[in-house]
Image (cartoon, rainbow, N blue to C red; front, top):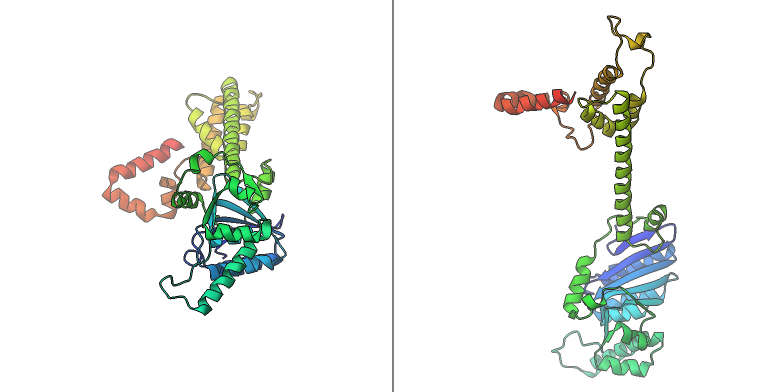
Length: 364
């Protein structure tokens, strides 16, 4: 299972990855680069979400190297912070979108051991690394000389400033700028990281689900979940209205009474088709065989329905079908699946045993 790949949409041939955390400590850059490169044969576009303070430069360059050799179009989304090496990775993409509250920072690389005395070889290596970063950061239009000055000054950018310098392509309006723009770097990193919920199914086809729900292909996971819940509530309301309609019909024709109404509702939850059939199946033949009792007297629709209702509920219980919201482990369930429990309960807690039995008998 991939560690950094969130979603692979087979239909649209798009994938989503997430670089959240410090490179080299929370992010295994080599593994990230491997998972990124492995997507190249599977998808045409990759959405890379970033919320990172940066980290190890050499490790981060392995991700940049993978990005620049891939055929897939890479669209970076700066969700919170893209600082230091994370900013370099972001700007190395084919397209960069930045949330209106997000922050970006670039600076010169530091020696791995800040306390070590620099020799000529180390200075040359550091200068070469700085030049490499300047080249990557200037690829979006900002002059290399200016990038060098901005890096030397360790410059932080708001979304508007980053866009003005040509470091990002677009600003995404989030309606959260007032809430988040004044947070410190650490606060913003933490807030965005805490809002992220991993997707367990890497092959989850969010676009297809969104289409089935009548949502645009750009719908977020939360919008899809909200639509599913709205549909569930709507279907439940429709079901309840339909049950009420049939109950009213049953009251009118005599098949539903105050005595059997609750049991009819249970039947409607367990087997709606059978419930509807019983409510509407009124015999208009008092002289026929089905309209008479054993003594030849006419049988009312209520008596007919009551008898069939008991039989129907008993049949459902025998099949192990509980009514909606009911606990399936009733007296009948234990008698079939765990009779020893009933024997022990009768000895140790007779009152509970009797209640279990009474509840079952009352449900018939």
